[in-house]
Length: 456
Ligand code: ATP
Ligand code: MG
Image (cartoon, rainbow, N blue to C red; front, side, top):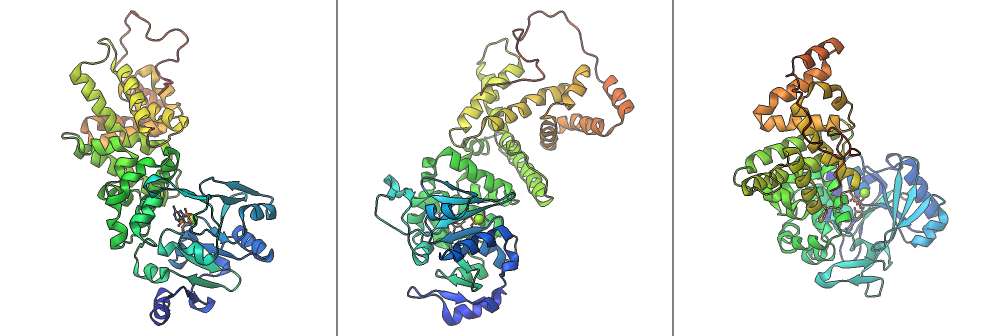
């Protein structure tokens, strides 16, 4: 399919504002490959007299023979006009106003054509950062507002043809990710495009075109100005789409990890911990990719607990060598305090929700009890909501620390055993030593040590 497109390009690439039009007979996209909901949206807008196209990742992925993650639509209808046509529509976004059309299992994102404008609706801050991008235009204008050439192909569901203004088809065929326009200016307008470049590079296995790559070191510092909520959203996409290993390598290669997980970047240069931290993270990313490949669910907090585990160890190590902290504090209490500190720092870059931070803390604190294996706590621990994540975490740790392997194996065996064998395994654990309680660790109303609730 793509070799045929190449022939057309050599004859007729887009020039002087005249796009290449690829007719239905010459590409592999058809209405049958588009979701029914999306076809409904395309047809409703077209029947109401608007220009409307399928665009972005869906056209790109269909041409590559991949299943699109979602369907994006572009139209000349204004957000309010779209809103009036669909009962199930919600308008979102201030910086970039969009319509979301809701269906039971799908959201279709409909964007109004944008153009470069000088009016109040499009404003740039210092450093060229685009604060608002709400000047509407035509398809011809809209093309140049998109990020990469392979994301700027428009499919017309009525004529079944593809419109290409930027030579995106040739780049797609040659496997190149090329930013549209001047790379530095486009990254300055929206530094998140750097993360998107890395995401598509890892996802599609395509290199970044030279200028697209070379502008990253000159502009990536601007990622510091992006809201932590948007960065978190992009970070989820980076690591949860099945290419986490390649993504992580690219983030480090382009020195961008420091804007998402600066503490992890530091741990990866730590004189004694860097090699172990690197292997630990790599194993976790491999597991994540394997889970995505098998369509298994991902717990978003798990990778966070992995990325921040070695930064936590560094803090604990420092406190130990400085002899800071109250002398009588148990290791458990020190871990609680250090965990709170690490997560507070990490949240300045990625806006983790309370559920994520509490899950991370639970995974970390449960390590104590999983390793301690007190006879009377085993069943109780196994019923904890975070037990599975904490056990997976322990297994991961055992991969880089041989001393933990027998303990991780014990838990694996225990979970697979029948009731009688479980009892026997518990009975072979060292008996608890009952000493008179010298001092209550928690005031009466605090949760028991095996169910900690920590405010970070
Ligand atoms: P996928 O959905 O597979 O992750 P996508 O390319 O469809 O990839 P979306 O985030 O769904 O990505 O965006 C849809 C389209 O909107 C993109 O293909 C691109 O044309 C445009 N776009 C999205 N974000 C930006 C941006 N920050 N700057 C310019 N264009 C963008
Ligand atoms: Mg998309």
